[in-house]
Amino acid sequence: MVEATMQTGQLLTILLMAAALGMDAFSLGIGIGLKGIRLVHVLRLSGVIALFHILMPLAGILTGHYMSELLGQVATTAAGVLLLLLGAHMIYNSLRSGSESSIDHTSLWGTLLLGLMVSIDSFSVGVSLGMFSANLLLTVLIFGLFGGLAAILGLLLGRRVSGSLGEYGEACGGVILLVFGLMFLI
Image (cartoon, rainbow, N blue to C red; front, side, top):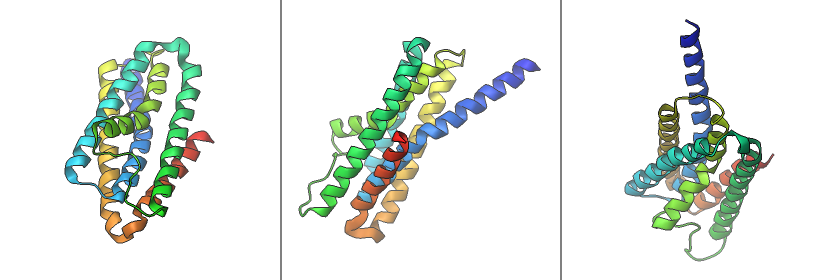
């Protein structure tokens, strides 16, 4: 009975952490979706984000518990700074004349960079989980599922709203990323 209660509590904790880690993928998805995105790119980008939400905590878990406190703050700060920079760049690009975009989510490198950017905090969580005897496979699969679903929801929501925002969509997406970046740093 005690064992089942512990497993249920552990599963609930993992689900809550996965939902929290998926929030940055959701916010990035809204920001990119506001610029306009094709459905094929929604699937590709969310798939890469899901993959990174599996690989990063797995790498963190394997790294071990002795680095947990140091990397936890560094990864969170790095994620916040990256979101701030991307948000500022999106706002800058929307305000200047011309059609040059921020990070090109359609390119391989752009897709990988965005996937890494929203998954870097999953690494620090993985390092923290390395101390516990959590079910490794279940944990990383739940993280990947939540990260991918949050990205899809954000991309589709941003895509749907972008038509009514017109040329201000990228600036709105940049503001959203700035706010989430500041939340990471505060």
